[in-house]
Image (cartoon, rainbow, N blue to C red):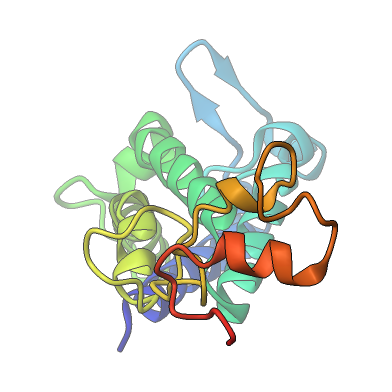
Length: 197
């Protein structure tokens, strides 16, 4: 499995954990509850639009994650990697801040549905953040660019690029004073091997 495919797979698992967590949170009324702020079971759907639930992020964070995964399925994409890196970092810090996540990870508070969702979501967020940080270097390594080549170079030299062309400008060259095509040709062949007889 390639590096990009691994990132897509882990990000998809993390997204699936959040979607499953959203369904469970709505059914069991697991509202968001973070330090200095908390929702209410009666308004869990409304609160989800702005703050998320105990087990899922709000839709304005889920949307960019879906977009980034779709972009990486097409090919390497630096912007998609940056989005996943930032989302993964934020979710890595967000999971332990939620009271219900901490509850379900404590000994003796295991739940056969909620605990696996929390574990999959949190571990997926950590993996997503770490993998996305190395995304740019991994894409360049697999792009076929020769080692040591400057960014953006294809590794193929342009044909006839060795000529300086200083005598071909026609400004002060004696060979180009006659305004003929032969003047520009004879002045530009400074060792490029493209001069015709």
